[in-house]
Image (cartoon, rainbow, N blue to C red; front, side):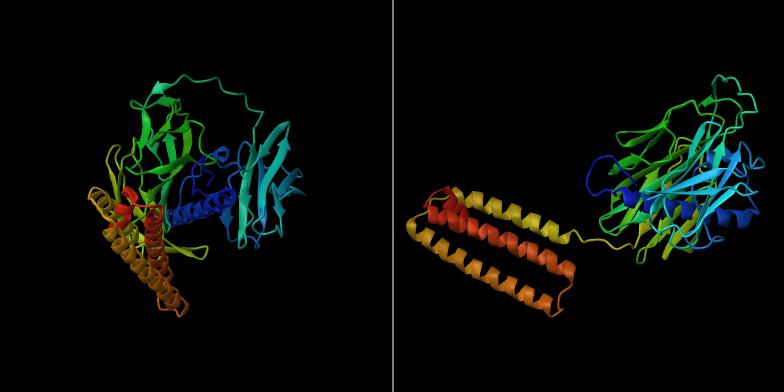
Length: 421
């Protein structure tokens, strides 16, 4: 995911990996719904144009591009389609089904399909070539035989968040990444302006909020909110946004409100360690293997506009905050004692005693540090505990050396601070 500014955010290659993974998750969720309901409505081809879809009915590494004009029944045959793959350009003619298939594309290379039809330039999103299975996508040209409809004025009306919407959660060591993949649906034949602004206020502590590639240009980030400006055209408006929350503690609870009714709740969580997903609004949680990982797919019913979605995600690995808290408490205590000691009168004899104490403390800290390194080499301490303890010892040594330097410079307030240390 490409995010604007900030540290610790995924770069371009990470964006491509996440994007392909989300496509796969959505395809798996749709398959579950289809098997449960006996099928689903085919969306407008224009809304699927240029979107890669992972499949397993193609050879490994194959990419199939279907070229149509306006509708699925209007294939464009014997027409060149180009695949731009990491600086190389491959060209294949479409067959009688309007498909151009590219085989043996280098796995992981960044690719994009393009075609020019009657002066109209079509191109897909960029995505990584698959290592297993294949990719299918469509490029949809405008059917110029049909007259363009006159603009329709917007009216007041409601929109819903369609059943193909997903909330995807990915726990990491330091934070939890949330992806909102929303399909805002307007079933009217007119553009509509909802009675209230379409604003998603994110949970407290949300950071790194961004609108993802492929989202409608109507979607924007304003502070800690996702705002989608109206009017909403007939059909579907896709809003794909992401943000992060701190993962300290191994458990996270969120209460998220949405400005429109969610037709069918769907939450997907990457299972890391003993991760669990629970919610009073989710009636069914299943484990789904995908791309060498396991995901928890939770489904629920309708969620009314303004009704909080309550999620509890727990059991994922996390870094303990105890070492950092202890170090902070010790630093504050040292500073407080130093200030108290600096306010007391001190003579040369007391300064000598203080220096001896500092030297003794330095030797003890050095001995502790040597013992820690020895334990690490012999495998008696894990890396997390080693890193935390080493940081604590080095910080304490720096305090001692600072105090000793103050003593060498002569008596004064710094001497008194060294005595306290």
